[in-house]
Image (cartoon, rainbow, N blue to C red; front, side, top):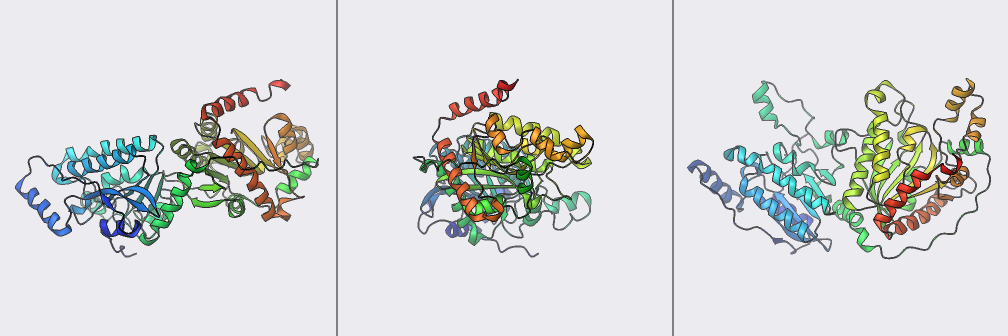
Length: 501
């Protein structure tokens, strides 16, 4: 793949921001004693680019929304970061934080400025510190990785985005290929340090050309900043009367291959859906869908077990739960509600799952969810088998589809343990009280949405009806004090089963 045509920093800003809205925050850079050779290099870079350093910072309007921007210019000493450019970056990040602005970053860099040595190298610490403070303030940080982004820039502010997208065909990675070849005497393998390969490994959320950046950033910010617009609860949909369907019939209905899953739920019930990708740490599991979305006016981080992505060959693995934990961190950092959707025949039972730490990931999901400092809503949509389902359960409110269920094992597995056969699966399902009506009675589920009589036979109508309930529940959570929610959640799961013990 040929390298992309490289836009200058100013051209990219002109492409993304509204016409005439850019206002620079830059002040003249300050340098200490410079060698004659380095001073000449800086002068040549200024002459070549018309800029005074390798980064430009400022603010503008994007689709009418005020945003802060930090962008690299590769033609200025390969976009390298020295003390002066780091100071400029930190000043801009801190100003964005003080003024409550979302921050857009467009790195393109060979990394640390070699002419300044180790003191330039350690600047990445203070840049990362400033980004962390910006995120701790609950403000969005969105990153567009351009060609090339390597070295210390990739290992600091290039890799800390809430949402990270990359330019098609861009060289993106830690170690520059020229350095690798010089050190080891062989070329770095092709197609490893590319945007597309990073996407395949769950390290970036999308690969997007420059002319589409404004659209995806605007859609992301529409969700990330939507909590400021939720003023009142929508009307509470009428509570459904739930027919007393026999347990095994519900289990059988939930297993229909044409039953609507998370993708149809998002299509019919949500707006402004921004799919995210992977853990950001080198894993992506098709069994879990992570996204930013809105249901009505209410935003959320969405974590849905995707029945289409779970197969016998590739069941839900520990990577999916690490991906879920990324979503939990996003919700906590941004103060957004978290919605989880349970729909799984069970997590992987394999050597790879054991060696990948499946049990530990289930435990960490449970601990993270029950203590999460953000509103939480769980939807039990279909099958809910084992620890893979339980990992996404603890929430402030739990809604269930009528034929959804939750069980420590598939009923067939419970039958094998108790009766040493599979024939007693229906009896075990009844005895374990797995269906939604029983879960509501025991306090695990708060509300049930009817299927009329089966979601697979009315997928669009069911998803829209379910969406009305989710909109109401999310808005109600958003308008409830966070400390109160956390205290209620802690008490809820502490007291479950107490009446029957």
